[in-house]
Image 1 (cartoon, rainbow, N blue to C red):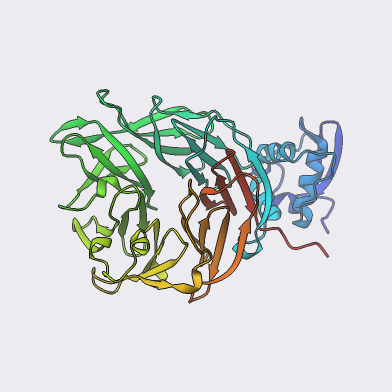
Image 2: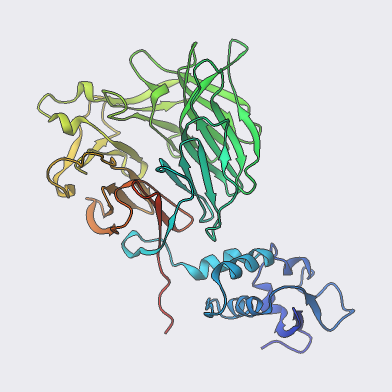
Length: 444
């Protein structure tokens, strides 16, 4: 219990609240209250017994109760988005997130809501932000939603087709677009995720000349590097590397003979091995290529192609739709059009074959006439794979199927992404995306 000296009064919108500096200290130094108190959480100004804040008192009451108890209860008369806006003002949004969700667990995910996209036509890619927001690519546009799922101004890089998009952080988004024939444009741009402002473009330089190029798949490293597959009309075929802070090109890996690095559909930076996974998938190319690039030695340290796959393997099994590296397991997981999971051992030679897991097969027969090809994601030791209108969750050392996420509205899932304690699934037919969350345990 706080002493009389410890007590603090706030007048919020005409209502007086009394609490303690001990409770207010839970808000943290980065909150609005952190600026009102000294290092010992004593008020910097003693001229008034009350401290006036011209904000919504009902929301303040909810947030103050959150600081007192660690639990979040939103009365029916308070819209959630209004509370989120007030939490942002006070710098308490991280406290709201922590109370709103439990630890992410694919087997406990529940559908929170579905949102109808604003853009005409179907979405092509969805990317979860680090703070629970999301961005969705539609043709030449990228639509951005914050954690409260309010839409921000869209991103547009000269009306060219968006090939990939990714979050540098909660404030910045990178998008890669195609070069238009005869225009000499294309490439990548860094945008403010809140305002849609283009901050700078990323250039490819070859022989001291700036070259036009098409930017494909994107990936990011923890030391502020951006990787992108690149195709150009001169000698810019491979994977480029840029500093995400300055926008300057710092490296380029030119593709070896016979490998389509510039056409890569998937890039994944591996922090532990300091390598980049580069994968080109069927049906974009007739053959599938998967490799690991070491930029320190400019060397391809591991590679696999279905050209060298076993002749006894069925054609459909060779057609890899997605791939993901699993560093803890020293393997690469791939998926085909039947949602068979296959595994390749990174400790073996490049000629290693795929070990297909028959227990992973969930469907029989062919894909629909207009299929959404399977996608893979790895999060918190769980493996996720989309197939038609559901997402399967696999767990354990043998990757056993443990649950499935499914809803009927919106058609097949063309892409999904995990971030900020949420899973976002983009449906192909109705331009709808779903938000899945792990609910908090019930209050006893």
